[in-house]
Amino acid sequence: MMKTTKKRAVPLHEDPIRHIVWKGDRLDVIDQRLLPRRVRYVSCRTAKEVAKATTDMVLRGAPLIGCAAAFGMALAARSGRLKDVLSAEPLLRRARPTAVNLMHALDLMLAVAESGPKETLARRMADAAEKYCRDDIAYNARMAELGAALLKPGSRVITHCNAGALATAGIGTAVGMIRAGYLAGKVAHVYPCETRPYLQGSRLTLWELMQAGIPATLITDNMAAHLMKTVKIDAVIVGSDRIAANADVCNKIGTYGLAILAKHHAVPFYVVAPSTTVDFSTASGDLIPIEERSAREVVEVFGVPIAPKGAKARHFAFDVTPHELVTAIVTEKGVVSPADGQTLRKVVESEC
Image 1: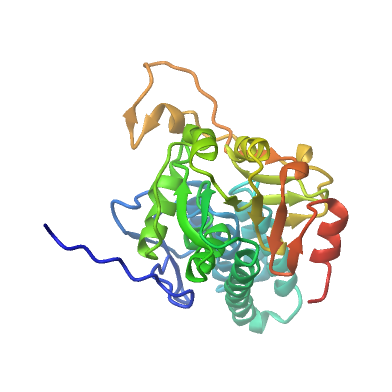
Image 2 (image 1 turned 120 degrees about the horizontal axis):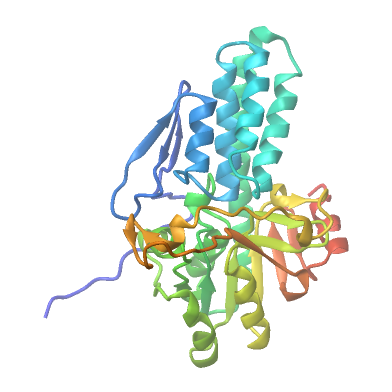
């Protein structure tokens, strides 16, 4: 019988995935549409190419979309003309409508562009984009630490979609918390949902967990209820693309259903997201714009039809989980518990 050895768990400071690389004159990103079958980088040399890569799902994940947009603005600034930066901004803003990190990054970069002389425009914008990504890396590390402290030893957890390194500039939000929890003995096993129709859970999250040496078992989306009933799940951990002022959470489609299941089975439901994901200008989740993508992504998988020819389908990319179903929101500023608007504002607007 062949002897097998347990894969070494990767420490938090070691990132096995270099998925976004700034080269000064271009941004190289892993084409996430090809994972895990193939690792290929796409080079973006203009803001238009960054916007296209974002829209086409070459890159995805709310924090990473924000980082990419910041570099897209820096690429536009290489001409040294403010007008090029101003024309790039709406192009990038339209790339994805739901993730508020995109809007946050663009607002910040516009402020930088307009705050100094044109002679230093390119340098200032590149420096600001790099700082934006460094901040995200630091936020990820802090959220991982705070989130892991909420888990009990030996927890079995479910996660949905991909809120790992591939969705951020660092170790991830939800998966960052899971990685820190595993290294601290708090997480024993992870069950990522496959996340139909784009399969981010099976293609991306499971790949990341395996790269990090964390025990994981893939489940289809419709297995979660059965698992909570029979296997004893200790926590559900997800990320977010936008959190409204009242603490309603917008995340990948299927998150709302998981939250309802968790409530019924008395399983804690944790959301992990940086403060840049919070949108105080949106009063509740009902007002968050929900992206609807091509039905083709539902009726086909990797270009292979899985429904009858001519079939109609809908593809809502996100849903909204009411804050009453959320146990806690983990941000780099602190843990929001209870998850309500008052506590959210108090934590996010704190100076620490």
